[in-house]
Amino acid sequence: MSQLFLVGTGEKVVYSCHLSSTGQLQKLDEQTTGDGPSWLQLSLTKNIIYIVNEFVHKIATYSIEDRLHGKISLLSTPVSSLGETPCHLDVHPSGKYLGVANYGGKSTFAIFPLLENGIPDVEHAITQDIEGSGPKPQQVHSRGHCILFHGSYVYVVDLGTDSINSYHFDDSTGQIKPNHRTLTEAGAGPRHLVFHPTKPLAYVCNELNSTTNAYSVDKSLGKLTHIQTITTRKNPNDKTDNAPAEITFSPDYKYLLVSNRGDNTIIVYNCDLPDGQLTIHEHLDCKGAFARYFGFDPTGQFLLIANQNSNNLICYSYKNEKFNFCSELSGIKTGQHIFWLNNEEKK
Image (cartoon, rainbow, N blue to C red; front, side):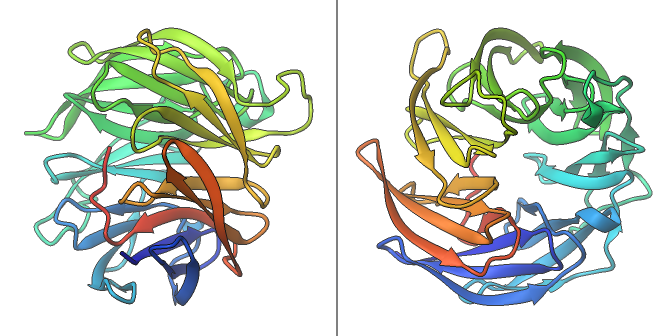
């Protein structure tokens, strides 16, 4: 089965691309967007895409006009993210709210009610700033980097304050109430968070100290408890620059993967231990520079890597718990996110 996907970038363009059933990549088209379309999020109705305009602090709403050719159309004037440098989005399972994490400040995150036409309602949005800072130069203030609705809570990962913050979320009113704060090691710089779909476990990749944290999850209390911290690098004593970026499970949940920007690898952890701890399985070569994003296709057969600084996409096949290189696509400038148009948006 051939598949279509969009690539968000650090430019003013989104690419539409094709993945064949044998893992071959092809660029089909490029469409002009706002400045810095670095994260794309599907609506619950699956016919609307929300795209951050990172460099102008906006959120744009697009309709999917043609899934066969990857055509999207702007629905309305982009709205303010109510903060600076929006970098991550999530839609509440009810389909009624859109959450945005703001990296640049003013508000760490915002939650927008969605109007009937899918447009974010700025007038009735709520914002929240997280107080504090960290010991490293990148941590002069709060830096929201990930927002996820999970159960009765919304979780916000804050790179600037070395914290993962949970809030009670009332989906009848759209209001939040502070609940629990989990601190990482000082200077870790937590970036992205994933929850295991069937086990009470969560994992966070730390951008500033090249580690991954494992947590047990009390879903009823919205609380994370630290289990383990483990390196993302082949050599944990390596002092060269490196910054983990993305984290996700393999489709069979046997592995947890984290990208290393600097080492230009993806670490593959074994994640099937009963207590949730990780062990290192292997490091995959990104075959490019600065893997800002990677993810599996909806069939679970292929792994795609977006290398921001080498302007290429890489495809590995995934079969029988093994990864094998399939193809490379050049000419994708500053690739930063991959969005599948046949996506069922697994969480």
